[in-house]
Length: 499
Image 1 (tube, one colour):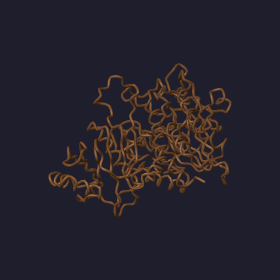
Image 2: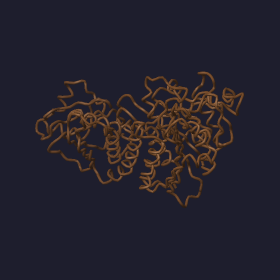
Image 3: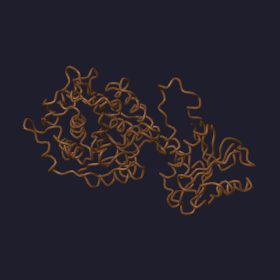
Image 4: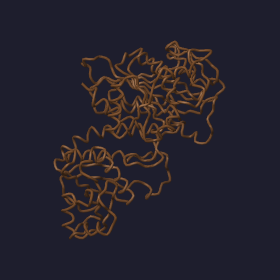
């Protein structure tokens, strides 16, 4: 779908979209069109339930006096509530509406509105951003789709005063959208296509953007003492990899320490010897989403040339029940030197992150580390799919993350950490066991386990198990991989850590 920006005008074909505020208050563009059609928009509203609320849409077909096929009234709600997220959601809803109608071209009019938080050019860019995000499809394996099943919208024109300003603002947003799409692509791929080696190679594509990419193989990882991570992958034909990415966007930064993102990258999780039930196991292709988000965040920052130094780490493994698979009761030695008794091989993500986190802090000495992982089903029980769980050893970092999440619509809920939870993981045979032994506080004890491997570096853990995959459409997120975390981390950097 092509997105263009232009001065306000009445198009000669396709669909024309105009806004209506709460209580059927027409925007200036809607007033102009209503006049040109002899009051047709007003009559259509009077004969419908349309009120101009933020989710309201009303279509007027073949309007009198206009060459367009339809005029679409887009409910905007109350002007003071029209922030960036509201405009993005409006753009996403319109793309879905237009594709559902089989439309190929459309123009939306963005007006100056009294009380609105954004200037028209800013609103236009955010509308276009939401439209772009909703236009995503993962359809590379569909070979027999009927034409009516495919998206029809080819061109969306956003009409606004000062279109060049809108276009300039949209340029960086479009680069973030490209990173979101990259993440959605790799998370959506089946596990016979994406496994540790191929996921690492996909990350090499970021070299074109200026990201430095290293890929450590098992021999190097063994030399480093990564027994926890390597143990998870030892039952698979696909050997583990450690992905290391560096974006050096601020070579003259006053604080030479980079910031760091670390991701769980279990490309398929059978549970290992502690095998999962068959029902729903196909979903475990996206157990690598934490690493996918880290790769996508590096893509976004490099794409828009962010003035910041960032490290991205991905611990990439496949957890399979092969003849050499890790067994319950095995004891492994992590890179930190701490020994871990593996009582459940399906609690593997924390083993991967234990070595990835330790490697990150040991080599790069970052200002802080944030890890992302589809770590526990317990966080879904606690928070569902509305919020991701956040744990942090640093109040300042936690506050910044929550605010960034609210700004982009990727919400976090802070969960507790406490030394008392450590006792639940005491082992009779090793320094720690990888599960607490019961159902209580499953997500909390997982986070508490990870904290042992941060070596007092300021740290946050985002459990994104409930927010990584959506079973239904949302305004800017089609059903499927969400890329939850890419926009959040990009916003965190933009607001607080660029030079």
